[in-house]
Length: 217
Image (cartoon, rainbow, N blue to C red; front, side, top):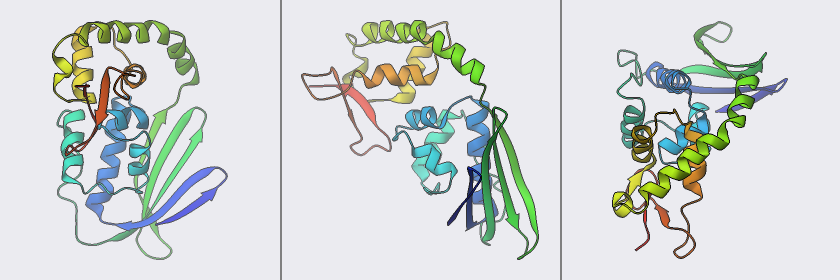
């Protein structure tokens, strides 16, 4: 893969199949439609904060079966690729990412030959600065709801067995009538795991695909 940068635009040139390129399209489409940031989706997948950022830029391969299973769970069975697309022939693609007037654009083109290219997809993600500021102002209330939720949950048997971030979110959604952004859940949960004696929970991967959270023994 070749990384190109022009006027603060990200550009990535690579070779892959039509089906694989369609998986990048659906990853972006589903994430944007669920209004998850890359960091939030990484958390729900049980991965490091920059995992999805790297997936979307083809720095990490999406061929992992467990990854596809977890994406299917998070996106509730939505399409993850165009199964009918060719998965044998590799084409030259270029992914272009840039910001303009509060919107982040993702455009992927594929090259028919050395001089001709065609648009494969173009997606827009609204990065509304006003909405972000309003969300920050209401974050104290929503983080307070998360703290109350964990105060209720920790004394129960819930964390006696390792739980994924997705399972914790499911419990929170059932607990609160207010929609809590995933980032607030992540921030509060991050305060609860650590070394034995310093935090009530531990975070571990063991043999699982993503991180799981459980009580220290």
